[in-house]
Length: 371
Ligand SMILES: [Zn+2]
Picture 1 (cartoon, rainbow, N blue to C red):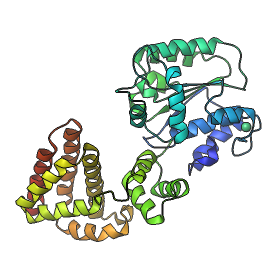
Picture 2 (picture 1 turned 60 degrees about the vertical axis):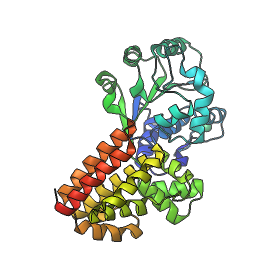
Picture 3 (picture 1 turned 180 degrees about the vertical axis):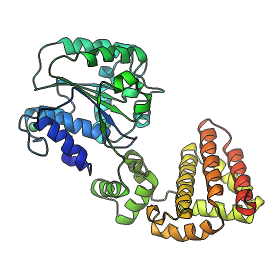
Picture 4 (picture 1 turned 60 degrees about the horizontal axis):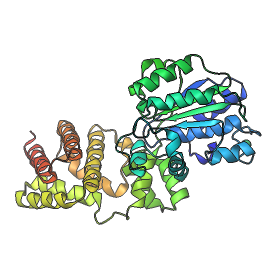
């Protein structure tokens, strides 16, 4: 991975480059960013730069022996640790699969990895720390630095975290730790306090669009739609882009239709709609509820007059303008709460038809009677 492959984030790249060029590299850094952000990609590009034999001003050379090995995630000085299953298995066992997974594209999430590797739950067992300490005690290395990259460091088992803390306190010479997290609030405060944080923001809609157009050849309109739905999460964007364009349903049409039925309090049609929702797979149900949620949030912004923040594609704005008239901000707040709760129940296998009918009745009441 090289810096030039990552869209945007110029300030972060600059800060990382400057640290190496001025010899001020912290021995433990935490690449902290939301799911689907560039946190792992930046950590990998940084690792490549650190051991590059012909560093350029703004990036690694991409050609030297070190860069070639780094680009295959197969550099002997780079140890990668990530969540796996069970207590006896370590990252080493899963390395070929993880390499493929990340080389495919480095913006994917822990959920993507668990699905790919068919793991129910991922953690970083204490066995991993033992192996790591063994490796770090070996003197020989090829490059300038020994690097330890821990992906999803929030999934460290407590015993593993404690073992890691010891190394962070007294790091071996020329050894750098690159920790990558989506959920720094779950990290032990003692780990946080021993690392330098590299804050990685979510991608902007424009950056997501650019990535989709450059890497997946999406046309402008489709890239805009997908970027809106993905909300800064590039992993999500790539997943949505892989679906049929608008699939067998159009999310916006579905939502607009649903809201019209609620407004009319057409109970017979709403029952039919709940039946139809029930037949969709859980994945599609989730997609529709997510869409409804982001739409309600946008309506909320619109009602508060922050029009310029509206991320909606223009063809959906008319609906916002009309539908916005019948709703108060307080109603939208309740709707967002109800939708969140519905997602929660559906994830936990509640009957989708009941959840949908419940939502429809509540929304009808809110829209028509304001309570
Ligand atoms: Zn190089």
